[in-house]
Length: 262
Image (cartoon, rainbow, N blue to C red):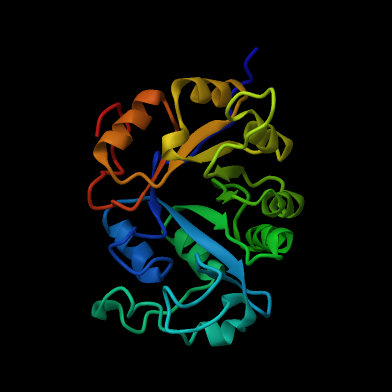
């Protein structure tokens, strides 16, 4: 017996961290560049500052993508806003700052764009970060338009988001399928997603196969993939009937393409 698929009002193509590797990730310049390439949906990473403000950053530590040092969540938003988050990428983006999630969300709203917020908590702040994401969207995102999509590798983060904003769709991110005696590949993760009332599973692209797509779709959930940067990989996922593709290659894949070819 199959369950009716959850609604999926999102584009197939999603720009990873704004514009992939073409601009410094999780900065407003990256999202603007992705939009210039025609993308209508953007993935970002959100975590909490010391004073409880959601800001955009992937890593727990600052060194890779800013001129700061240490754990980002130990700084106030005022301190985070003063960091240079662009020089590591190229001189053209020197002085770029890290925006708040609210700033990105308001930009998306003003430009009628879709948003995928990966809840990327600093360890120990899983549920708190998810709850804060839900509270923010409750405050600023109108209920009568397509809602953002919350995703996370951390079930506790999705639980926090569900508890504070149950109407906002959720997706469970999975990098490696959980093992369990007497279970088939994907069963444990699918149960986790269903227990959290998720709308989607967002998997490392190599994990999808026809059986798993059929199982997830049969349970009523959508199938999405990260991070897809090769044409052959995208064609395979389209042929499998998956629903979403997150990519760095905003310069390679046309987001206007909705058929079975690229």
